[in-house]
Image (tube, rainbow, N blue to C red; front, side):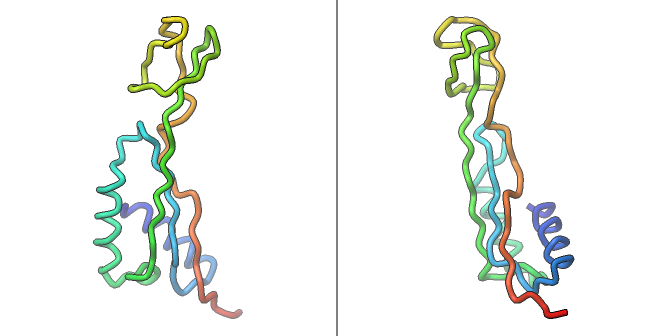
Length: 115
């Protein structure tokens, strides 16, 4: 969470924002990031008197489902783990299409300073 706050704050500074209103973060099902832990860490930073993040700043967590595709039969399915057996053809030739993402999707700032 501290890296997210740092990245967003640096960009907000470069865009002359006074504060950040909302941060949208994509968290993949297989990313090893716990949304509850992320929210708890965010609430900690909200109360730290940071320049761009305050009590009114919100965190939106966008959950990304895990999807795998069999390279043999092209069947797409929701895997339980990163290495998965295709439920259609029983082959272990699957690639993960989505579900490992952890990134800042976007953020909204306000009160841009006039030049």
